[in-house]
Image (cartoon, rainbow, N blue to C red; front, side):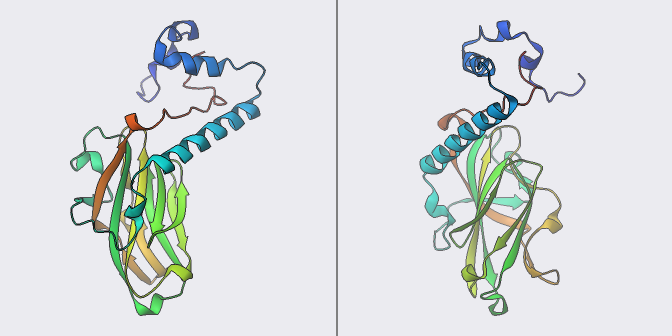
Length: 220
């Protein structure tokens, strides 16, 4: 193939790959006896949920979502933009980025829309310490509703916990889609400087589960 996006193991015989210790568990799962495609999907969903729970419990940074947290020692990050290109080469794992915004009085008590363009790979997004949404997948537009009960006049933190499994990570895409808004004509741009800090590397969390119901990119 001319595209370098498929792992070399997908082009090898299963018997060869399973002789490599780090791939044996994956090969054993592919060979799960009698499982249908739907059952394999359910198995993947269960493993993904277990990993998510472990990440949530092992990440030491829950307080980082709160507005009153002092992030003055954190590094600057330009968004949209990848952290690998801004001082964290070859980073895979979990990092947080925060931005303080000043909510006008006319917005108090009203639902807002938070657009974060796209994020590579997964995110948990907070407004003033409250989780308002999470999305999996690096090619999915992020658009979350901020309930009016969380909206008050004054400074609040928008905090994004980003989980990355490979290659680039961060908020990326169209800068016009990085904003907090009450309406199309009443909005605050979130383009520019955020604060960020890494939390856990990929080596500190469990291996990513694979969806064995998908036939491509896996040893046969």
